[in-house]
Length: 504
Image (cartoon, rainbow, N blue to C red; front, top):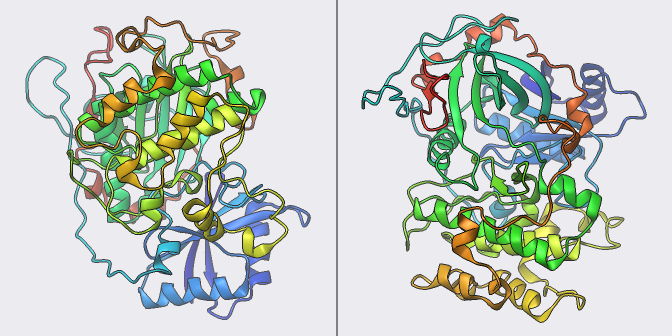
């Protein structure tokens, strides 16, 4: 018997499957557990042995999932279910933020075989919370409950300190809420992760990395910073800056494409944010329209640091195969070691989307061919297709796109080990930018988000904001199986973002 776990829209359900189960029988169980009608189309993805999401659309793919479950002696086979199907190959399902935290290694495994060693779990290390100015580090045990009112951890903040107002985002692993700190009435975003979904050492690494980068980002104007972290036996909570202007994806869906001067402004602020991370030894690895937020004045802030790689200095490389498919750099697809070059490639893709109103890798008129409606085919396009720059763009815009979208990382704009960043600043496309004024946020943004009130909920997708604001109950038996020692030291308070009224 195969133990399986399904996740849909924040709801987790368990299944016991026979190894001989047919795809139609599994589909029926999914429909029942997710309350889908017979006419509802949906997508099922399973997480393979390296944490990569693989779509199940045939009996052969289901059998492969069962085979690896048996070979790797996995405890549970995890499925993620989404209502609807992707519009185009490589695009995410409706409502899917991303589950490519560990990458798209499935494609890479067709090119090479890799031995994946298992490491012991490492507890999350506590960051500094020296509110009183001391250097002492404080940790705490998990709180004893996760009730409707919420229980406070033994240090710092707890659920009861916040009023939950709206759902503003959701992914496979997390829900994002708009909350108000009761003591100060200040608004924050709260990222909530169920511990039962943090199932292995790579998940622990992901949570730890995101926490560390949030801490680092808190001092920079174009990055979303961290207010605090706390936990209950059931969940982890990141309390982060609330940026109420919506994301670039939301605005691009309404404008289709941007004037070059608008794209130049957003790209320039993104460049400064990426350079700051690079100077701190961090590869971002998840630049995309969804992760570029606009504040109330129209300045950008990058968010979502779950795919970041820390500890990289100039000349250092890493090899993890990861990213959102449409933005993955060619060197990652080729299985090469890489460094900061992948962020500059992703910036090129994003700038192309802003100015052309489409991806440079759109596969037009081919979605009826099943062989060309896959991530594998998208990756082949990224590697082999000559990128055609729209003739409507200026010579300078065309030049900067060609520079960032060079498939050879050594020749890519921004990738020279000595002059890379300066090469970007000096490029003709950015010649009109006063970088000092830009860094000081003294350049007026080209667009100011429409805010009916301070909440800015009109800039968030209604599919989220209309959801009921609640933390779904967690099965006590499931909670009892969680190894709480994995989350020791998770609590954190950031004195840089707290006002004196926030101090505890």
